[in-house]
Image: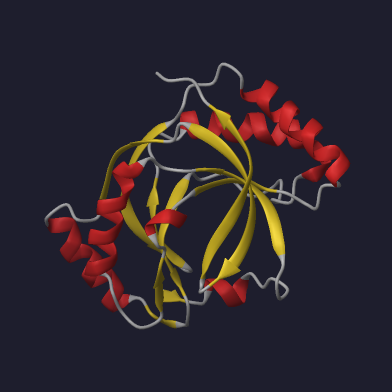
Length: 197
């Protein structure tokens, strides 16, 4: 597989910010992320620092400030009663990144469906794009042949260093996201707690 730059494939304007709904993993993800990033370190791969690990739920179009509170309350009502997802995964290489594909998908899909229904016209994410819950561990920052990366990942799989253990995502976060230092960073806007199992 040939990898290409995530940043070039999804250009943002300078200083642009976008509202996103994210699920943020608990601290369980921190050490597995560091371990895997160390094993996969190579030119052209941009590891995601631990504070910025996330599972994207939905990206939004610009929302007028006067409508933001109503949007948050609509989402809060839509996710009421949903259980906080707990997911685990094994790392996979995709054309723009290395990520943990989260399993089971169903609890994450339930959160996505509720948020998508509640945000209505403010949804930026394409409606024809299937939802695949994941946490990105590193983004491709350049074009390169992925054969060496796949070999590194195969080596990590042999001792389980590719795995994300069961990790809880106990709140839904509305964040003002920006690109900085070849990763996504954010300012919190709102947080909605999800119920425990």
